Length: 357
Ligand SMILES: NC(=O)c1ccc[n+]([C@@H]2O[C@H](COP(=O)([O-])OP(=O)(O)OC[C@H]3O[C@@H](n4cnc5c(N)ncnc54)[C@H](O)[C@@H]3O)[C@@H](O)[C@H]2O)c1
Image (cartoon, rainbow, N blue to C red; front, side, top):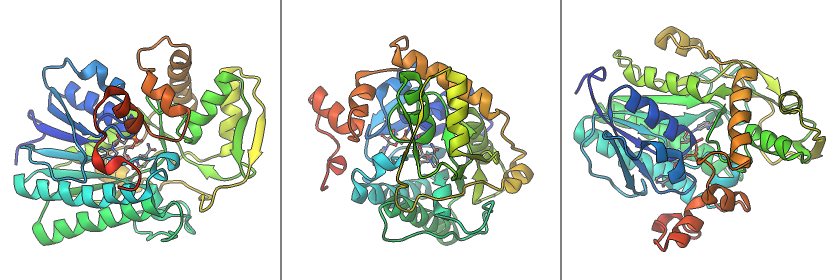
């Protein structure tokens, strides 16, 4: 297996999404060859537009629920819609993406002896009765609820990763990512940070579900990417799982108030019923990441929010090329970008993406 410190061929599935696009940029900056694979279900081409001319960057439209045959040294498996609005749009496809996608990418890793990292999630802990969440906590997940396609899909993917590791000696890394925010989040996918910022910038009421007393931790995207690349680079065989997130804990109401203050908005708070299975508390224990990877998040919430607000401000005023008709049309309804974008471009949307596939 090639040493990661030298130039590697790195596959990033979901590379045109929020996290994937930042990861592709970081890997190119580190001198690697990057193959970005995406079916553009929620990702958009504009997220990676600045990378398209890079001599070490390649883009492939492909759905990970189908096998892929390429020669690579490393695989970051990020393909999966991440926001409830998107993953509940076609829940069967969401589970397929997690489970079939994991099988296909693990099969590839096994064939070409690549190291593979899974973008797992804090959602594997469900609505936790242990706080903060450590990696040895098995979680409290509803297997039949509306979030289960995502939560159980990701849990099953973790099982597959560890079975390929035990049974086939695949070199795996399982990262449990906690709530991450930053530029290139979809402006209207229902995630709390982007929602609040967009509502504040537009002067619309800020929607809080429940009383806003539920807590979340928010990791800035640069810190998250740093954690993922360190984990992949670690030469010691550390399969994980490892929590990657920011342990700073805030109530949703505190977040809303901070966004209002930083944007100088006159938005007021409005309250709506809590969605089903919404966790009341979320906070990572990151001792393992600190000890094994030497990683801790560096960007404070206020600074991260300032950078994200600047991005959305430019986006909404049309001052950045990052805002696209894909983003805007997708924001008008919960329908993710692939269906509309594929129809608009006359291309057939990848078969597995359409409802009822
Ligand atoms: N952002 C977070 O806070 C967070 C938290 C926990 C876990 N994660 C995980 O990180 C990964 C990336 O999340 P994100 O926030 O960038 O979401 P995102 O929706 O912006 O990106 C997901 C990408 O995967 C692509 N994709 C979806 N289904 C696919 C398929 N079948 N084949 C190929 N590509 C497909 C989408 O088009 C998109 O580009 C996801 O696996 C998500 O579960 C993210």
